[in-house]
Image (cartoon, rainbow, N blue to C red; front, top):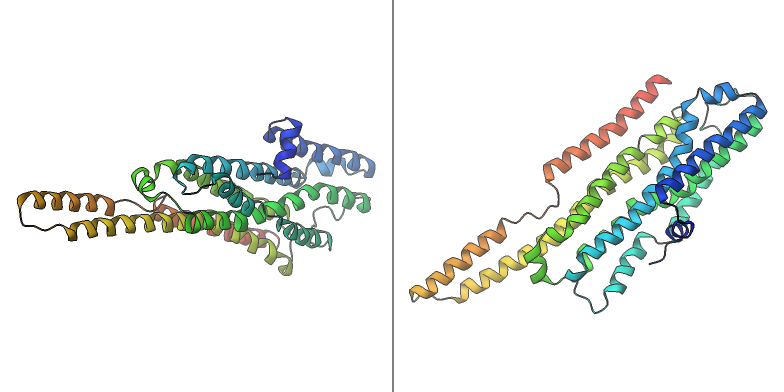
Length: 319
């Protein structure tokens, strides 16, 4: 499956964390030229928000490539369980949902949102040569806006649609899946955990960079962050729970059918019945959640409280 950003990284033959790290460094260092030109170097070097703003876009780039590659590798781990005459087409369909070009709509929205007005950013409003400073800031946030558009489509929307299709619409080899259970999905469990961690870090950036915002500018960013958290934490586990619940119920019904067909006229049949009931009991004990549901709920509550707390602290600091 082709994805232009991943293809670009492959062509330049630089590990993507290093590449995006160099982009962040370039975005910050080029600012020094603008600040020297306008006489704001000391203010620039002493303001950490310039550093955070330079890092945000490249960090999103790292998460995008990681998401694409890790989801691909996770699919490779379970392809032997998929009931399909053409595994390649099935995988391409799922990856297409993840990287659907509808993310350009999200990019267009964020471009309009951030470039339509300057009132959302206040920390440099007293700098000399504000025109050049605004030009630099526009350059600095461009990777953030473009990569943010992709990321905020990929995780809440693309990845959710891919999980939904994988778990609810893809045909699996039920016997193989029921025998191996969670084991082949270990890569997905790791991927989901790291996706949750990445989302938790992402929500730290906007309040740090745009800590001085009026009420009407808060909503789009915060709604996006909350949607990101819910999609990263809850939805993947829900879809996998539906998948495993379906297979588990099928196996239980299968055992029930076999048990009901066995008469208890002789000791041999009684033994078979007991063995089937024991196997049925073992199947009924199988867990259908990739992660403990209580832990999952606690993570969601903490994450949402984290977003709310950041907003409250920001409001108090600049009230």
